[in-house]
Length: 440
Image (cartoon, rainbow, N blue to C red):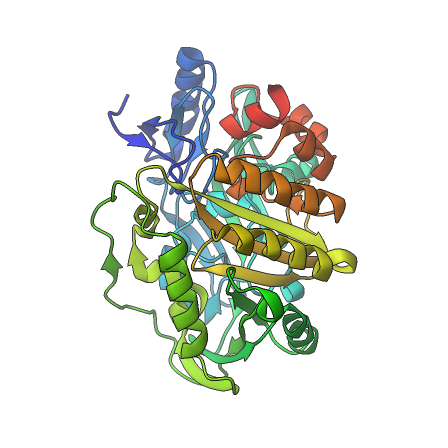
C-alpha cells in the first residue's frame, strides 16, 4: 500500500484517503479485489477534483487511477477518441485541438479525468445546446468486483451504462472511455461580456443569448443587496471560425502553501467583487481569446483551493426549475448577502432541456447557482439549512459531486432513482457520500 494520502479538492470533510496506485489496466482486477478483501470496500480516485465526499471511499482506501492515462485509439476523420479513464481533459485537448476537435462539454476545470467526467456527468457553459458530458459518451469498459469486465453502451448493458453516467463511481471501475468530440476551426473563442445591474437583467440577457450562442454563463456579486442584488457580468461566446488550432501554454501562478485561516472573508470578498464588477465597462465588450481563459479561469492558479485555509471550503451548487428560478435565486442571494459569505467566483447559468442518459444526472431545465464558502461552523450549517429549504420548496436539487452536507431525506427526494443505482452498485464500492445519504 502506498504511503500517499489524498483528499477532496475542498479539503472538507477531512478523511484522508490511503491510495493504492494503478498504472496498467491489467492490474485493475487484482488491485480492486485486494482492496475489497482487506478493507471491505474501495472507490476509484482520479485527479481529486470533486469538492465534497463523493470521491472518498467509506473505507478511506482508494484505488488511484490517474496512472491510467494512455490513449488507445483515435479516429480524427470523425472525431472519436478512446482513452483510459485517468486521462485528463487537458491531456485530451493537447492531442485533439491540433486535429480540429474540442470537448463537446467541459466543466470549469480541465484537470478532471475522463473517468471523473463520466462518474459525475459534468456539464458546462453549453448545457442549453449539448446537454451533459454523458450525452457524448459512446461506450466504456466497466470492471466490477462481482463480474468480468463489460463493454457498456446505449445498446449493450444499457442499465449499467445509464447508472454509471452520473453514478459517482459506484457501479464499477471504468477502465477506458470512447467519446465523440466537437469539430472546431480554431482554438480561439469569440467572447462577449456585458454588465447587468440586478437579477432581472440576468434573466433578460439569458433569454436573449442562450438560443443564439454555444456558450453562456454569468459571474455574480454574491454580496450585492437591494436594487443591485444579483448584479454581475454576463459572458457569451462561440468557437471562432478562423485562427490557429493551437494548444494554450501560459505560465501559471501558484498558491505555494495553505494559510492557517481562510483568505476569503467578508472584507476581502466585498473588495474583490466591487473591483471586478467595475473593471468591466457597462457597454458590450468583445474579445478574441484562447480557450483556456474562457473555459478555465481558475486553472490559471495552481492549488487555488489552498486560499481557503486548513479548514477547507464547501461548494453549494443547486439547480432550480425555470418556473420558480427567478424568485428562488433571488431568495438564495438574499440569504447569502445577509451573512456576508460566499465566493469570489459565483456562477449563475441557465441549463437546457437536453436529457442525459444518467440516472442521477444533476442538471434540469432551469438555472444553476454555484458558490464556494469557507468552512465555518456554525455559519455554514445555519446558512445551508435555510438555502436547502428554498431549493426544496422551489423543486430544485443539489449537485452530489460538489456536496458535503446534503441530508439523506433531501438526496432521496431530489434523486428518486437513487434506489435503481443502489440495486446496480458494485458491492465492493462505496463512498462516504453514498454512506451518508443512503446507508446511514
